Image (cartoon, rainbow, N blue to C red; front, side, top):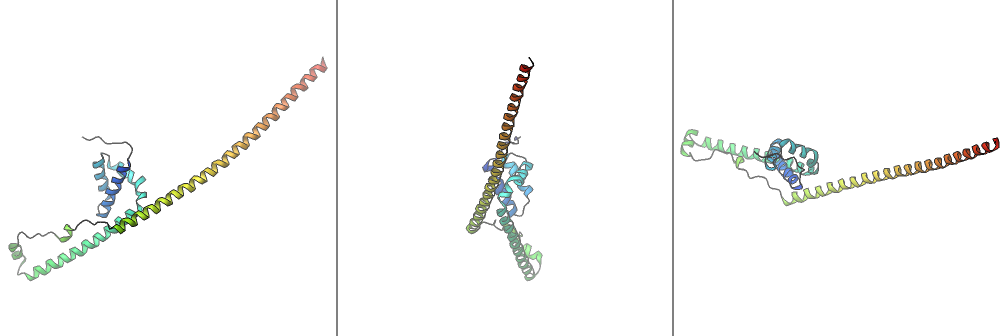
Amino acid sequence: MTTIRQDAWTADEDLILAEVVLRHIREGSTQLAAFEEIAERLSRTSAACGFRWNSTIRKKYESAIALAKKQRSKNKKGKAVQESKWQEETSEELTAQESPVEQVEQKPEQETEPASAKAEPVTLTMEQVIDFLHEYHKNQQQAVAKDVESLKQENEALKQELEKVKEDKRIMAEDYRALLSIMDRARKMSGYQHASES
């Protein structure tokens, strides 16, 4: 029995997670199936894989997800076209023959599997990869710019807060000095009164 890992995710594991989920999206499979495959590969729970994907990784791969969904729809259209062609060819062959039974008897070794089942997996073109990398780079730059702007605003707010604290400290110091001065005068006046009474 393998132990379920609960340690921090590594960059390599994040890449594996992204690659497998994107492949499942391209192939028309579900993300749950992807999480189960990843869980088995990485000795983690599928829930942990799903949580990691939804909380952290998915945001970084939005353009890749869109591209994978496009490829999935192209695959579906391609398979539908291939299947309809196969059905047309099959029906033409059946009508050309005297009977379907004879066709099966004459060619028992003929494969009855549609051509779409043998379709090669879709491969990415270099242009698609470059487009994805450009989009990813642009998204990263925008994210960094947002972070920098956010940090600048936070820094400015902290500077203003620091100035306010310094001003409050200065006012308190002045008040403290004034209080000491008043107390010193009161002590001296009290000393004069004692001297005049005696």
